[in-house]
Image (cartoon, rainbow, N blue to C red):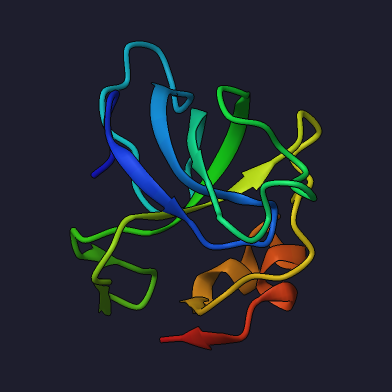
Length: 127
């Protein structure tokens, strides 16, 4: 469960390393977000090797899609999915991914949502 003030890792090659959640964009007065939700984030730090060629700058405010959480989440077939870290993928204002690669695996149900492009960019899908 991600809420306002939570720090998350970025797992794409946009150049950002850590972001902080500013707002949950799920509904009216919604407090928590989980896998598959879009939030608004601020970039806190950049990757060392990508500082000069980064697509984003420190302090930028962007949208992000949550792809991993530490809290277990049940999918449509009642399987629970749990990861070791909270991670996001940065998006543009049109909900297109900024990066061209995604490191690590994603939950399989991204294949059946409107974020199919993100599922095809990832290294693998977990059940």
